[in-house]
Length: 171
Image (cartoon, rainbow, N blue to C red; front, side, top):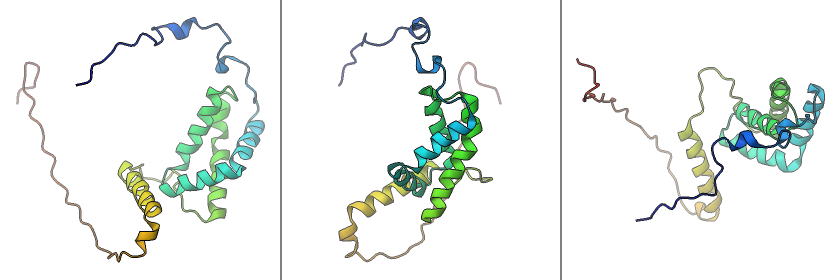
């Protein structure tokens, strides 16, 4: 059994309010104050070869572009690059640039703007596992004969828990 040791190397409650004014990146004047400047900054960042390859890999796993774009602009706000409102205004530009890269590479992607489709964690986990299996066993996979079988998942009815106790509702 592992014992829990109290750590005193943590910030105390309210310590964030005692930092010197202007010592945080978001308390400084923003580097980019115009939407056009901010859009050019993100377009240059997305056009980077290393970023583009990572973006295409992420698109293949099924992560919506809205999630990626929102994460990018939030990081820009935290680093003091631009304000929150400029980040919100530049989101469509970021998404369009990412869609352009995905279309030019022929990668299927999810925009996150589709009606009725939500991010399914099981689908993302299955895609990641498939990718890991394909990468690790690419040489052995040629020797294995696979058959296409349809997997049927049975839906089990959800049982309601009957709450009991002092504050439970009476039926």
